[in-house]
Every structure is written in structure tokens, then in C-alpha cells.
Image (cartoon, rainbow over all chains, first blue to last red; front, side, top):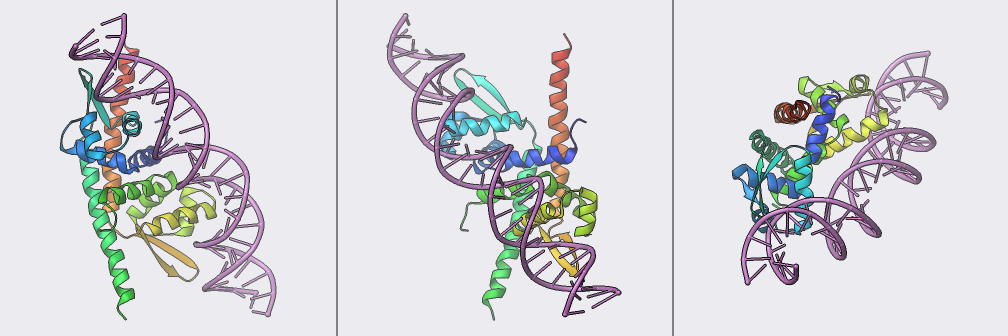
Length: 108
Length: 108
DNA sequence: CTACCAATTGCAGACTTTAGCAATCGTTGA
DNA sequence: TCAACGATTGCTAAAGTCTGCAATTGGTAG
């Protein structure tokens, strides 16, 4: 292995650390989507979306399929959905703890 | 909820997107560690480690326990280990696909 | 061929993150 | 009280990331 695993992991997570990229991956978790579809759901500039899709492509997380002038994106690994699921469950835990803390401060 | 979930997720992943923070979380996945112990394992400047620990604290992923002049860190959620596990498994998938691609290029 | 649409690329400026150094805080032991 | 140690914070220069705009590619239709 050329690079230590923890560095590859950090890069993987860095790839996931952007709201548009998260939304894309969540949409692709459901099913394949064309760029035009992603664009309609997410509502950012086409150029911005392309940039973020390029990041996901470089990381090897998504694959493309051309159909006429449309490009369809899909996940390369179903485990990405699993990652999203675990992340959500961590968040609900962490956020509820933070809410408890706030409540404790509020209640004398 | 004040902020959409996908943004909170992106921030969670951003928090994980740093090699030192990954190493810390992997060490804490095994058991609680004192800062001095983390320092010995990871081998960065104390100030740098403190910075990264502060990031993890702010994100609510780790908790501290003081014992004399030493500070012990632990995970707030065991699911973080799960996240690391899934990430590793995605990486082995993605990396092996990239290696196959290289092989295909090499083989005529 | 020409015009058009979908998608991508290149680039400049604003913004964010990081590393390293010096300074600080809190605890322990002389 | 003072020095020493573990841990943290503040600060700044350097590196990296993001946004929006303009330009470009490739495919489709008139």
C-alpha cells in the first residue's frame, strides 16, 4: 500500500464533507439519476453540480452512463448508503445529547 | 430542526476528514486514551493534537475525563467505530476497482 | 451547416483550514 | 512559593476549497 489507510479514510470523509455531495449521494442511494434530475432536486448552478460530481467521480464513489446527450450517475458501492445511515444515527445521538445539555442549562 | 439534516451530515463528515482525527477515533474505538498516550501513538506536536481534539470535542464525538493533570478521551458514541468499519470496507472496494483498472491498462 | 441544449472545464477571487510557534492555565512535587 | 510538566489556546503565514462566470465539448434537431 502506497499510503497509510488512515489517510485514505480521511480523504474519503473529506469527499463526503459537502452538502451538495451528500444530497447527491442520498439521491443516488435511492436510484440512478440523470444530471438534469439531480439539478432539479438540488437546485444549484449546473457548473457547481458538475464540480461536485467530478469530486465524487475522482473518489470513485459514483459511475456514469451516457444515454444520448444525458449523463446518468449511480453509486459504485451500495455501502455508501450504509455510511449515510450510520451517519444519520450518530447525528441523532449527538444532537439529542446537545439538546439535553441545553435543557439542563435552562432548568435550574 | 434549525438546519437541514444533509448539512449536519456534511459537517460530521468534514469533521472526520483529517488524518490525525481519524487516527484518534480509531485509537478511541479500541479503548479510552490519555492525551499523552495519543501523542505517543500518533507522533505530532502536542499543540496540533490539541487542536484536532478540540475539533472532535466541538462536534460532540468525544468526551473528556480529568484525572489529576492528565486528560482522558473516549468516544461518545460507539457508532463512530461502525462508521470507521464501513469506511474501510468501502475503501477496499473502491481501491480494488482502481487496481483492476490499472491492470486492464497494463495488460494489452 | 447552424443553432441549440446538456454537461463539463478553466479560472479568479473570497473564504476556510492547517501547522507551528509562543504564551497560558492547572496540577504536582521540591 | 517556585519550577516543571501536561494540556490547551492565540496567532499568523501557507495551503487548500468553494462559488460564479465565461468558455468549451458533444450530441440532436432544424
